[in-house]
Length: 137
Picture 1 (cartoon, rainbow, N blue to C red):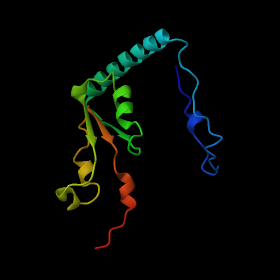
Picture 2 (tube, one colour):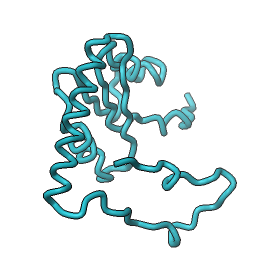
Picture 3 (spheres, rainbow, N blue to C red):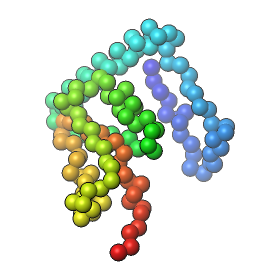
Picture 4 (cartoon, rainbow, N blue to C red):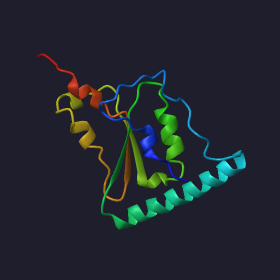
């Protein structure tokens, strides 16, 4: 199974009319049984890739899940990462900054949470949308 990312891309000069945008995608499996078999094979492959990533100890992987509250970020993380060994993965949720975090620049708290080589880090809501907020002192 391959997913064509072009199905989800839009040229920058084209306007989006959400009323005309499809809200469903084609089924990847013809039955629940076929879906479970496909999911199992993907989980095995993901697990194998994670072991290779950990053993190579050359790079880190950072996944950022951004969305509004109740957008399904937690469920997506749980589903997508179901084949990952939890020992090689860390999830960080960024909520309102603490007093210590406010004393530093805006990237400080994420920089402290970057994954080590061979590991996978997940930012559940990165708070990058706040980069554009201007504070007047």
